[in-house]
Length: 601
Image (cartoon, rainbow, N blue to C red; front, side):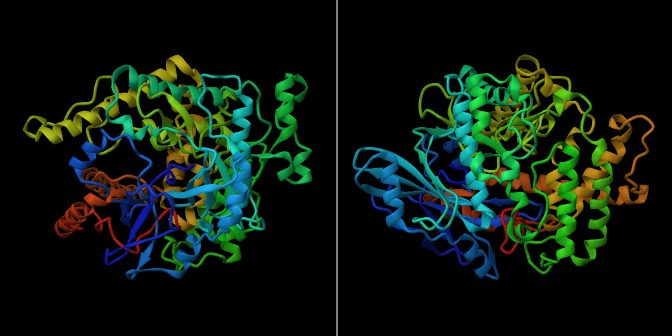
């Protein structure tokens, strides 16, 4: 289940913030509800309110992260729009679902349904049975896009990982899939997955309290997953997503899973017979109206083909006129179309020159698509080493360098304390640290600890676990490459700024990675680069101001807040809104209705 899914039964707060219950009634409820307030940030990301700083510090001591809400609803002019309600409406046949689940766990009767989560893209229930079994029933929201491909690929990926490393007891694996169907025309009347329930808590719930060897154990379990997957001794033949062989076209079935099929051991031969690489399942290629665009979504032979396909995808979206530029979830305007076409044309021209020349950095590998603290399951007590990794939705086989970005679980929390020094020394505490309250000092100590863990993971991964990781991190154009395909496939919905910035960065770095005597096809003028830099400087300042505000509120990606704390959190948000100076802060107050969301864009 997703990190956006493993949360408690929810209450949604509408524009007047009068709470009302939502979702299915649950027999055997946990008896505790979490409140949720979703507001959207101006700069690409949504943020939501959680407890205030003191509540966040207390949260570090909690051991029950499953009981949080994450119900994402967009409001415009005070009311949920019909399009959004329809995109999130996920009806299903509960009686048929119970029968399917009972067969999956060899039970006679399902005793209770417990709604344990509603995230951006999925709804999740915990089922209890008369034979004491428990299972997770997960269904998609239509907003995801092509839910059928997403489920088929995620199930195949989780099953592949469990089979591929079945005898590796040191590796924490995905939950076992008990039953699934990727189509709507089944008795449950929805695509679904039934999974083993992972008995534990998320690493996020223990991350603030563990120290020393416990923290090292947790980091090592993450590093071990990444290195095991990315070192794989059998090289994949293409880029795309994993599927069972019967779930791809006959033409794709004729293509091998691995290169050098004749050199496989018996176990690998079984995998090669059962699995295939098919179209990429990442939602960015299937979201909303973009799913209607007839385009090449893989599999691809190499990174250049992937970049070209991404650019052609967006050009076809413009040509087919499927995008409604009056949609509040579309940042681009009709005036941006000439610029978008220019940027996409540049992407096609530079694609053959982007991939690193070292073969170890371009070999196709599989990695977790969203390795956050909430997707690492650990025991509630004792060692915090991972017991399972959840949420493999959208996993893809891609070049090694593509999957070498720092895992979100170990990212340094920007905007909280000073940036990490380049010389390897510890980051400094704020100058006014001694004058801060004891609570604030403890807060900074915790985040200082997080920063040191970031550095520890960097050096441990680079020097002890995987030497190729450092090579990928040191690529002169690595930062621009890391998100280039996403910047391309989101350039209409998110606006041209991110893609333009990536291309300007590549233009400036061209001589450091391009073949000798290869002229740069990127032709931004000095004036265009300067204008972009000025725009990005303003946005960077605004983002830092928003980050500071989020830290004060204890904001979290899923936007969870405990009901007992909601009134206090909301009152503080109103106070901060009154004090917000749009000129000084470089932008509007971020918590507002009708704003952009990358979940709905």
